[in-house]
Length: 97
Image 1 (spheres, rainbow, N blue to C red):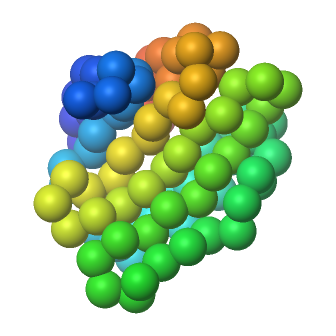
Image 2: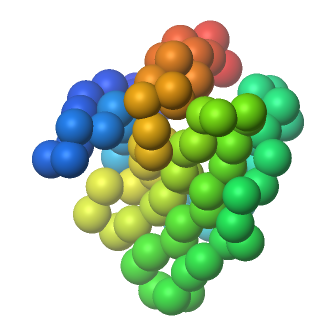
Image 3: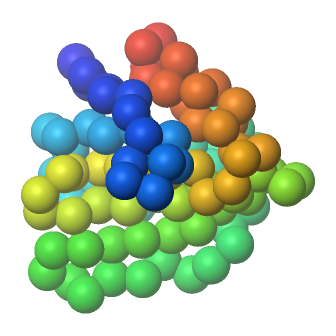
């Protein structure tokens, strides 16, 4: 069972954190979010192949970042105010996935 946490980061951006997601699941989970919420890739995936991976997605003006790091696990972060609603949709979806 996935247990997401919803909070604001130090910059005030709305973020979902899933601590127990392994790095191997990063692209699969990002792809599932992308398909479920009709998101377009805004960047190519970036990774240092050790402890950090990131991709930026968008739907209209809403831009989010999905990331994985070895401290926090899988993270979905709002990149602008118009994406807070999208992050909340994704958070609700985790409760039903």
